[in-house]
Image (tube, rainbow, N blue to C red):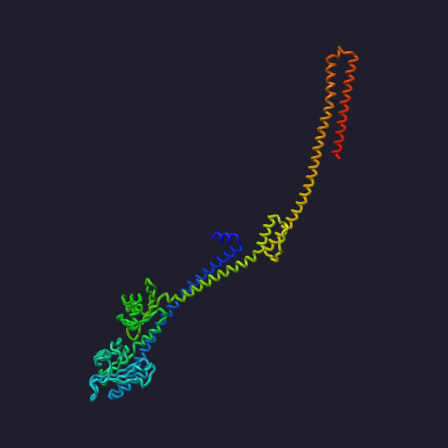
Length: 489
């Protein structure tokens, strides 16, 4: 870690690259964060809108199919009521009902027991598709029958309720399956005689698996699931086997214990967000117009944002790669731009070590670095010239110093000679002077008792000694004048 810190501290190009990459990365991160936040809102809004539209489309599709079935049944009822006196045609009408309506898998035209004299007590013209038939309509796939269920038809709900109420009636899923084992619901209309009295019931059958197929298309995401409930809260679709699998889901258990029907009824045409510990869920609801059934969709929030999370991962990966690429490019560019500075640094080190004439390649850059390099070269040349002048001056001073040292030696030698000379002269002067002083003292003390001849001898002696001193002083004076003249020259 310390190595990296030291490397960053010492490398200007690395510091500049890191600063540029950090600044641009921060800007990109802020921009992408805002974009991702907006994208998240847009994705959620679009997903919820599409889920709601899918729910409404499925509900509308089911409603339209049911209304078509109701309309077709009413048209068939008109034919039946106008041909009550011809029981044989009832079989043809029930068969045509299947041929003309692809969603209907059975049609029953049943009359009061004993309505037709001379026939069986119970008369019902019942047509249905055999279990070996395909979904496409084929005449030879339609089978005729005269019974349905495990009880006489007057006791079955599809007959008894519309007969007694004299009103159209959609049955709940019937407990007794059709001859093929299909769980069905039936749309039932009372048949009226010429006197307006109810004489029978016309019923058409729709398989519950058709509703399941329609509901299955309402699956906006892989982890979402659709269902249909009645007003009592009973789950009609999916079938019981699938319901048990769904009930293993904590959310479904939550709805099972908290009345899913009430939840869907409360939502009506729209959606509601349910917060759970494991995740948030959006519950969509749409009520069928034909009867009190609700189409519901449970949409996990993580499915809504799954694409967003995938997009966010891609954006983060692109951001990291972009920052790294930018860092490498900045490092290469700054290294190339700062290479002349590195050359200047090395040259300055060489100059600091005394290599003043170190050559440096000329740069073609016209920017500040190029100008700095040119000025550094000019400074190097000027410094080299100054160093050369200093060397010359140093050599001259050294030569003058040698001359001065030599002159100083001569001066010292002359001073020694002068001292010796003065000492010599002084020794020669002292003796005559002492003699003069002695003679003067003697004359001063004995001149009264001395003869003229003795006085003259002493005077002559003093005169002779004075001449010696004068001669020595003249010689000293002459040597001094010569030395002064030589020094002046």
